[in-house]
Image (cartoon, rainbow, N blue to C red; front, side):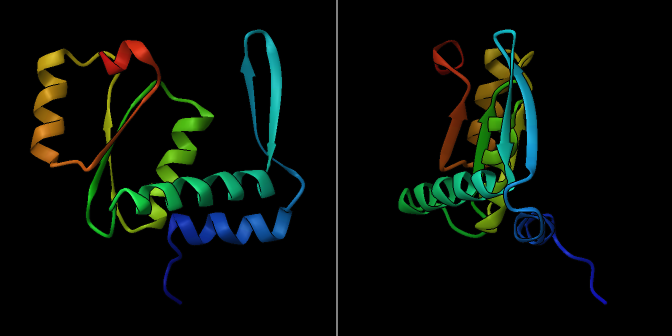
Length: 118
Protein backbone atom coordinates (compact mmCIF):
# COMPACT_ATOMS: atom_id res chain seq x y z
CA UNK A 1 0.00 0.00 0.00
CA UNK A 2 1.39 3.37 -1.06
CA UNK A 3 1.64 5.99 1.71
CA UNK A 4 -0.97 8.73 1.58
CA UNK A 5 -0.08 12.37 1.08
CA UNK A 6 -0.87 15.02 3.68
CA UNK A 7 -3.69 16.28 1.45
CA UNK A 8 -5.19 12.79 1.18
CA UNK A 9 -5.02 12.31 4.95
CA UNK A 10 -6.61 15.74 5.49
CA UNK A 11 -9.42 14.95 3.03
CA UNK A 12 -10.05 11.55 4.62
CA UNK A 13 -10.25 13.14 8.05
CA UNK A 14 -12.63 15.83 6.78
CA UNK A 15 -15.02 13.10 5.62
CA UNK A 16 -14.51 11.02 8.73
CA UNK A 17 -14.83 13.72 11.39
CA UNK A 18 -16.97 16.35 9.57
CA UNK A 19 -18.46 18.57 12.29
CA UNK A 20 -15.94 17.65 14.99
CA UNK A 21 -13.21 20.16 15.92
CA UNK A 22 -10.19 20.19 13.64
CA UNK A 23 -8.38 23.25 15.01
CA UNK A 24 -8.60 24.99 18.34
CA UNK A 25 -6.76 28.28 18.72
CA UNK A 26 -6.52 31.32 20.92
CA UNK A 27 -6.97 34.81 19.48
CA UNK A 28 -7.16 37.93 21.62
CA UNK A 29 -7.69 35.96 24.84
CA UNK A 30 -10.57 33.92 23.37
CA UNK A 31 -10.61 30.35 22.20
CA UNK A 32 -11.96 29.49 18.77
CA UNK A 33 -12.67 26.24 16.98
CA UNK A 34 -12.79 25.29 13.31
CA UNK A 35 -14.51 22.04 12.37
CA UNK A 36 -13.15 19.62 9.79
CA UNK A 37 -15.97 20.70 7.43
CA UNK A 38 -15.07 24.36 7.81
CA UNK A 39 -11.36 23.65 7.39
CA UNK A 40 -12.10 21.70 4.20
CA UNK A 41 -14.21 24.58 2.86
CA UNK A 42 -11.52 27.16 3.63
CA UNK A 43 -8.82 25.06 1.98
CA UNK A 44 -11.04 24.57 -1.07
CA UNK A 45 -11.70 28.33 -1.36
CA UNK A 46 -8.02 29.17 -0.94
CA UNK A 47 -6.98 26.59 -3.55
CA UNK A 48 -9.57 27.89 -6.01
CA UNK A 49 -8.29 31.42 -5.40
CA UNK A 50 -4.71 30.33 -5.99
CA UNK A 51 -5.71 28.50 -9.17
CA UNK A 52 -7.49 31.62 -10.41
CA UNK A 53 -4.19 33.48 -9.94
CA UNK A 54 -2.46 30.94 -12.17
CA UNK A 55 -0.87 28.75 -9.50
CA UNK A 56 -0.45 25.16 -10.66
CA UNK A 57 1.60 22.05 -9.98
CA UNK A 58 5.21 22.83 -9.16
CA UNK A 59 4.73 26.58 -8.66
CA UNK A 60 6.11 28.18 -5.53
CA UNK A 61 3.84 30.03 -3.10
CA UNK A 62 5.42 31.94 -0.22
CA UNK A 63 3.93 32.07 3.27
CA UNK A 64 5.42 34.90 5.36
CA UNK A 65 3.53 34.62 8.62
CA UNK A 66 3.74 33.43 12.18
CA UNK A 67 2.53 29.89 12.81
CA UNK A 68 -1.26 29.92 12.92
CA UNK A 69 -4.38 28.14 11.75
CA UNK A 70 -4.36 30.39 8.69
CA UNK A 71 -0.78 29.33 7.92
CA UNK A 72 -1.83 25.68 8.01
CA UNK A 73 -4.90 26.29 5.82
CA UNK A 74 -2.79 28.15 3.24
CA UNK A 75 -0.23 25.32 3.28
CA UNK A 76 -2.92 22.69 2.68
CA UNK A 77 -4.40 24.76 -0.17
CA UNK A 78 -0.98 25.09 -1.80
CA UNK A 79 -0.26 21.39 -1.46
CA UNK A 80 -3.70 20.44 -2.78
CA UNK A 81 -2.76 22.09 -6.09
CA UNK A 82 0.53 20.23 -6.22
CA UNK A 83 2.31 23.54 -5.73
CA UNK A 84 5.25 24.07 -3.38
CA UNK A 85 5.04 25.90 -0.06
CA UNK A 86 7.92 28.32 0.43
CA UNK A 87 7.91 29.26 4.13
CA UNK A 88 9.73 32.36 5.35
CA UNK A 89 10.57 32.83 9.02
CA UNK A 90 9.28 35.92 10.80
CA UNK A 91 12.87 36.65 11.88
CA UNK A 92 14.17 36.78 8.30
CA UNK A 93 15.81 40.02 7.24
CA UNK A 94 14.40 41.99 4.29
CA UNK A 95 17.42 40.86 2.27
CA UNK A 96 16.78 37.19 3.07
CA UNK A 97 13.11 37.60 2.26
CA UNK A 98 13.87 39.20 -1.10
CA UNK A 99 16.37 36.45 -1.94
CA UNK A 100 13.93 33.64 -1.08
CA UNK A 101 11.02 35.23 -2.97
CA UNK A 102 13.12 35.88 -6.06
CA UNK A 103 14.99 32.56 -6.01
CA UNK A 104 11.79 30.54 -5.55
CA UNK A 105 10.12 32.37 -8.45
CA UNK A 106 6.97 32.34 -6.32
CA UNK A 107 3.75 33.25 -8.08
CA UNK A 108 1.92 34.31 -4.92
CA UNK A 109 2.94 35.60 -1.51
CA UNK A 110 0.76 35.15 1.58
CA UNK A 111 1.53 37.63 4.37
CA UNK A 112 0.14 37.90 7.87
CA UNK A 113 -0.56 41.61 7.73
CA UNK A 114 0.52 45.07 6.65
CA UNK A 115 3.86 44.89 8.49
CA UNK A 116 4.95 41.82 6.53
CA UNK A 117 3.64 43.27 3.28
CA UNK A 118 5.85 46.34 3.68
